Image: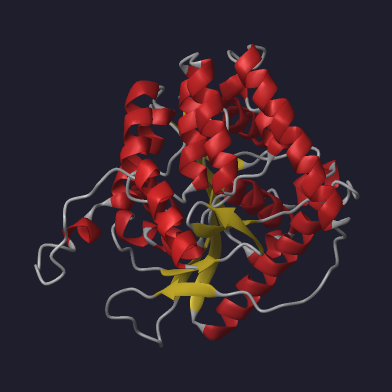
Length: 363
């Protein structure tokens, strides 16, 4: 055992560069813990959205120096190199993303970020290798089946300063985007100017690995059953409607509103139209409506919903056309919809968020 340990240390020494000695009693020894990792990751995402791919790659690398396990950031780094037409680097970081836990080979095959390098030998060979490995893992793991089950899911509520339980407030239910979580989405409250509302954020039901943390989705899928995606979204709509009823019964409210971003925006449209009797309106950022979801009678019945929508013209995650197509579709059906386009990417800008709060209070 001692020989094996010595050999392991010798191998490790060839991989990890020698580090300066650490004085564990020095109060500055832990200064690395103050590194603004989340801020760097957000800046990297913003640079990617703005098509500044060299800058985004540098920022992702900086973040990864402090968290080598974040498979999502490693994958994003591979995407940056794909967009920069660097086939060898795109392949290198894609391989490392899979080693860190990223495993969606289907997404890789469809991701337009790799279109410029997809047919180059070094990248194509890697994708074929990763596909074979994924199929082997799936064979050993067995066949996945989708089983419907009831469960308790956490949500979080922010009350305004000086909250008065005898007074009625607008209730705003926040629906976060794909891969995010309710605690992150709760931070919109301060960005909106800490308005006098009851702000509740729900957690999407379907968890999955997203870097060093769990992310959540409002729908799930199963390659053995193509109906699972649609059915799971319907269950999420039922869950959101149930949360609206429970929260309205728990607090004095003068109306309930849905606020959704990205995938949460799609869910806000779906739930608001399907359960229009529960809501006064919808505020949507960076998303749209699947116009095939409902029939003409459904759209007519929900025409009383007020809608505020905002979308970035440079959005690469959910294209700007989804926002404008939804706007035009609903306007033709007589909906009261306010649309704010902005110069920027896939985000909830503070200015438009505050605009939405004023719009909500206007009627």
